[in-house]
Picture (tube, rainbow, N blue to C red):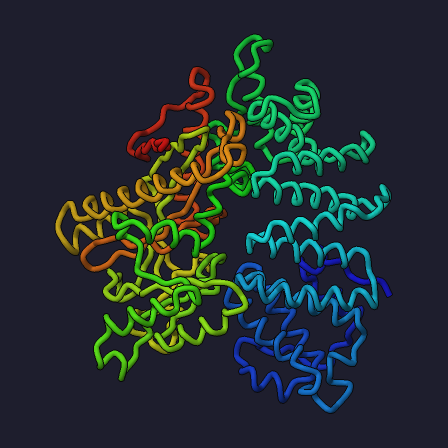
Length: 611
């Protein structure tokens, strides 16, 4: 029996699963059932059907993802806890069914940011595939595992997964597999670029490109190879190819509808910069101020923010422990909440608690701390804890690396009795020893799901999960609304006072980040006009307290720029348009069309001062 490939699974067509299971029970409302009811009263075939429905909904509804995981966990409980009825035990079903279900289980875990747990499930799936091999499924699971490792910033391990897919024999007749091998070559090269290793990235892409005949060459591989080679030329002065060959690769990618539009940008920029090109070279039409009304074009441009061409130093912003280490050593960074890296600073944490908490706090301990995993997104993996719970977490982490434990903001500014965070967008260009920073005036005010005094739903009261779409309980407003709210609650000008502190905190953080360049080899941090021409959009998340002081919660290196609702869509479109309008003015100043509105951003130029 042929196995269903994971690209089909991702779409989750329910009819496909009927190949394996003849469902005997009627449809059940999974949302209304407790986990206990699922365990006791429902046959395993029906549990699987419920989990599939929830996994389908999870693609656009994160609440469904949490519910799906509960059902999958019940289905995959330890064999000794399974029903005595062999027909009601998934471990007695065909391995193909187990593989199919575990792949869905892992996808649901990824959806809520539990990549660590997903890796365990991916490895279990690969073990099953060793017994019952299916090439298409094996490739998809390896890609899924590699992507989870990528999100955890374990780039060397992720690269190994992708290269294993690339190293398989290539059969031109199996088009989907060949396409996925091309994707894996790019992902493996991306891992090298994240680590600042252009030479390895160029080697991976060059070898993969050489193995393909002309009609089988992939436009994304070609564009990436051409861009990396030209960056090496301008950064180091030499590389394995020639300028004309690299430009042909870029041109090939720029003419393809399948490759990222960043290669249209690179090709136009390189054509403009080379003296042998005569006549004006204009901004590629796609990057002119035309993307607001075209969702497909908008998504193409927004996706460039995920590209591998940003500054290696930005990794420090992505890792909450590294960010804490960067900010906690300077008194000027008092916008960063007090925190401790556990278990590394467990003793200092205990001393702080003993000194700063009175006897009533110890008798009636409140949950005043938040645990943050080093790599996470959308508040997933965060946990509200008491002091004693934080110590237990530290003990559990002794063999698993460090976590960040920060004190919660105890008197946050609330709107309609709900906490909210603000997403501030920052646009950066890194080139040589300078980071040009543009602070956007457009942003989002993101409300928690539950009231601040809802102690039964602490995570919903404290977290402002951006992964939830508008209409799934999440509410977002723009900064125009927030300014009106703050000025009316306090006095006119209060919002501007708060914004001055936001500006100051962004400037301090980016200055500290730029200062790290002196601790890295120059070949890792120097960037030419090619890679340095691409805008990097960062998302700074703050909580505002009742004194209108903004507290930085985290920095998102890859903020979600896909639209999730009305205010969300409009604000993100404004930010993406602004980023590329600034880039166009910087690189095509004589040819770009629209003028920039200075009311939409502020400029902060930050240079590294050599010791």
